[in-house]
Length: 202
Length: 202
DNA sequence: AACCTTATTGATCATACGATCATTAGTTGG
DNA sequence: CCAACTAATGATCGTATGATCAATAAGGTT
Image (tube, rainbow over all chains, first blue to last red; front, side, top):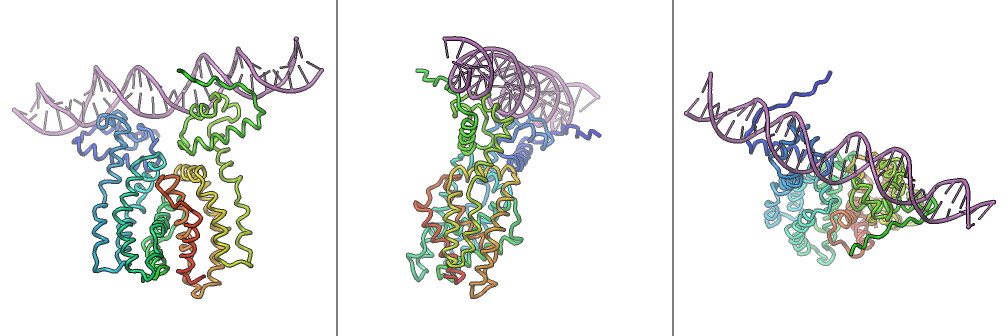
């Protein structure tokens, strides 16, 4: 009954193996947390533990690669262009931003690793949120104030409030694992519309 | 220069010592996570590691006591009465609920341990959020629908949306540790007012 | 088919951690 | 002041974990 899979000694090109390890590590650490041990990860990959240390000098190096893969290889460069397109309404632009952004927060691995690293005190998270503030929220706030009948009414905290409501959908789903809206995109549209209504921006 | 504090061998009554350990454990695990080791905790308490195991049979027993202290010894029993007071406006009741609730989410230890245990897959978190839904959100939704000019407009997801925006203030503060509104209570009031305005409930 | 390179392995080390237990010493009651 | 009780300690055990390294074998080259 011991269906122990025999070790797969097939050789892979180093860059391919490295990619496979990082992919597996992202999924693994998203599941069990950044304290997950390297033997369990290796078992999940179907390789030996020592192989990991042929590709990464230490566990924290591997975690660096995980961060890199989860955060940086994503779409953040598209964001500025989403907001500067003056031909579209504010509603369309906000929705378009969250259409892109929701690709992150509704993704199991991204949400969990972001939370794990945040709890571990990672500087990365602060940088990320500051980036968001600079690239999205500050210009968006200016646009909204310009378009609003009561410019002083809308403030930065309101944007964070909208943002928090949307992010919380991902948190409920991937961290607390409670039932969530069957259609997150629709939920986001509702949230944005309510928000704009409250500020008379529709 | 070795200012190693000599061990404080003063004896304490068991219940007092137990309370001291639990208090310290709450603060400790909130800081470093549920994987924090018992030796570091003992050092922080100024006692030896083995003393912890005189009061708790295992680390997971200690964590149970931590959960108990953080979650259950709190105020959740007051909640129902906050909403059934028909003499007050919906606005007042929602604000009063969040006035109480914010005592939790703006508290460093509560927020972090709730998040740590959620990421660890604790059933506790699901039970807690379900409790919130049953005791607060379902009756509140009924009240709002009864008072709204468009009863179908307000839905359960909208309440979670408001809730998420408010909770996210605590998350930013205690988990991502980024600058937050200097006056959280005021931020909550703003969020609730915007929300009620969007649904024409003011 | 023999050879060489190197990806992969298995054995191993040092340390960290949860847990145990006999010993020590602070406190109380007589 | 002494004896009894027990809170608290210090030494120690077994295992888990990150990391190392010589040995092995897969896959390409000639």
